[in-house]
Amino acid sequence: MNYLIVFLGGAMGSLFRYYLSPLGSSIFPFFGTMFANLIGSFLVGALYWRLKPGDLRLFLITGFLGGLTTLSSFSAETLDLMKQGLYGQAILYLALTMMGSLLLVFLGIFLSKFTESL
Image (cartoon, rainbow, N blue to C red):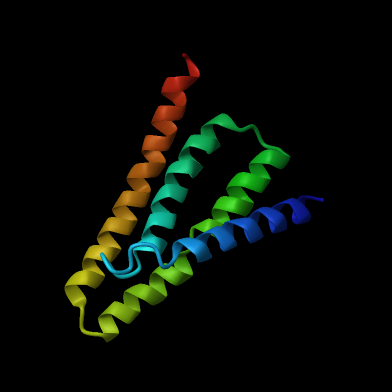
């Protein structure tokens, strides 16, 4: 049953990422993927602290957020920027996504702990 829970969550997260992909592409290449990775990282941090192991945690963190965030698309898009000779944008994309994702996981955990006592 756990496989089905993760599968359904992952399918929904992947579809959500698909619809985010074109978001802001006129502003910054691959903004949708970066946004999905950043918001997904924040939500992983917030939910990881709050949810006990079980079906809901499997569905949301492993499934939905696992499907939403994607290292493979991020890697391919970074290489695509480099292939186009846009090395500055590639480095910026790499740095913002990696540092932002890590910081937002910590922020999610912090806010989840902070609001737990309210």
